Image (cartoon, rainbow, N blue to C red; front, side, top):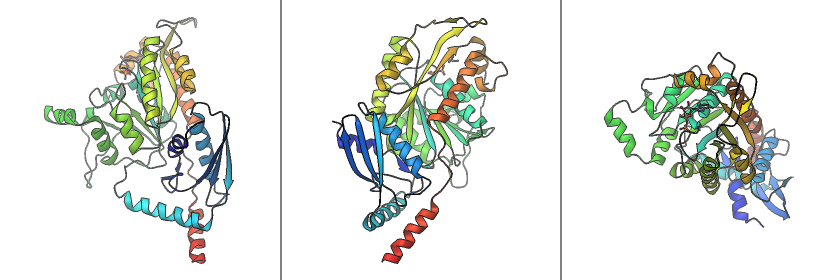
Length: 377
Ligand code: ADP
């Protein structure tokens, strides 16, 4: 039997997109019952026909199914009592007051953290291309280089310069096409600032990037994590509860083993695992023969172990990578390589498993709730 507090932790990462508070704190989770691997949640919504209903339900299902031994999730929508509504509204109001300094990231922004057990597996290359790909499709996208000491995003995007601050003393992200980029590589231009950043704990640096940057109203924020496990995942789980982790590995068993630690750590920080990407999976010749240079099976094993999808196997490419290292991301290159095709597929997979949060609002719902409350008083 899974403990209720574990379930509630996972449910706490499902936000009511409009109120910006998680469904547990809002008192929307009324009951949890089990029948072997089947779980039933009684979910109280303010108004049953709210357009957000589908979205909240599918988020609950997706997140609970990530827990081991849960195969089926049923949701019963139940009515909210007058008292429940009053308490929901007061929680929402209290949250709005207390969150006097919220992060600059909208609660409706999808946050995609890219992690790996060790360096050199292609984590930054994948982060960059994901962000570029999402932006190319018209989504408002940000790319945060949280690899504070080992930053490589500016090089991979072929950008340099220094970030400026606006009148409110918030850092303005660098803009390339529509993509918003923040990296220590665009801040630490002299030894002193570099030293200052080195002195900061990773989690503190992350806080600055989330609180002190004037991010736009993003559909997606892609975060390139430093390799390995630690502080920064914990901080992300706390500061941005909507974060999901994509684990990058190469096919070798040794790489898969270190990637397992990252996935484990994320689970402990209650960051849901979105999927696995296996990079450098094979080399494909012009006649489409594939050579598994680095062995095989790492991505599949990780995916089976954690019950999460293997979203893509990205082949090795010499030519794409040469240009990529010179500042032209693979998705913006002219040549049509198998690596580029795999990156495009990955972007499409991400949109499928993590679609942008619908713009449909339920402001009407809130207004109605308030009206009803006032009428009842
Ligand atoms: P990480 O962020 O994990 O340290 P990088 O994205 O910096 O990894 O990639 C490490 C090196 O591997 C870089 O030189 C990069 O160009 C190269 N690389 C990444 N993906 C591929 C690939 N699919 N095929 C060939 N080389 C790759």
